[in-house]
Length: 341
Ligand SMILES: Nc1ncnc2c1ncn2[C@@H]1O[C@H](COP(=O)(O)OP(=O)(O)OP(=O)(O)O)[C@@H](O)[C@H]1O
Ligand SMILES: [Mg+2]
Image (tube, rainbow, N blue to C red; front, side, top):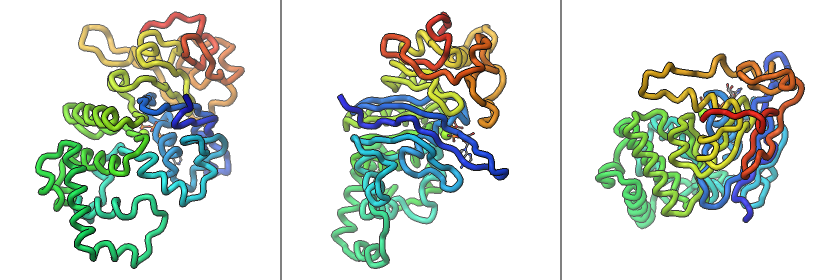
């Protein structure tokens, strides 16, 4: 079966103030099949959001630049598409559920106005003045939009949608804003949604309701999802497969339960050990911090923090290779180590 999305050798970087080249994503490979849910996990700063933005085509430019690689969606390389064709895929192709719901709606407009704009102009690279005002003058168009908005808000279980229509974003709670944003993401009937830590800014009970809603909608509509999180518990609940990222590379990939039950990369094992538990066991975090991208050089980026590092880890960047059972890991010692889950 061909993949819905394939990312191949994606490299992203920028030129810093001293004119030096900095590489943030150092060759990311990932694949997502139709109706599949994958999780991207890894600590803050490892490149999860940049990967998402590159796929959506909304990387902050400048300074960030795609240096190498391909992003194929339904077989077409997005990086070679003209801007208008890329734009037309946002909505029916893919959409985003953002990391910061409270600042992702436009504070100047009511919920109804924001849905109106989305329904009438989504997928268009340019909207002229007449194009913008004409639909607003049509009572039929306004009534249709209103009915579709109410249905969309009902789908995400927002109570009293008729009343929410007239509210401004500051009159919504974080959880309500995220439900509105999910309704917006679903509006174009996308094939794939990218949820970038959709619950991080919310309290834990609301976060779990938002995750339940996403899982339910993804299943009911037969969509695929890339779920970004640093919460391994959530990843194990939601995702069929998981990609563990470290310092701009995928270091381990495989079926979620296999990766979490028997990790093959020392970084994955470290992350699993760092999950806080309610017990007397001392808390075991991973020592140190992410390296400066400019200091990684030619070796494994985890070598300074890895309890299993040897001289062999300095020479080459370990490629992501097959380690059996359809799993891949980027560690020269992957098949020789026995790591605790
Ligand atoms: N526009 C930019 N210019 C320069 N560096 C950037 C830019 N955006 C992000 N970075 C750097 O790229 C790295 C990866 O950032 P990214 O936002 O993808 O991290 P993340 O994995 O999503 O982290 P978090 O879990 O905190 O959201 C970080 O070191 C960040 O400082
Ligand atoms: Mg992020």
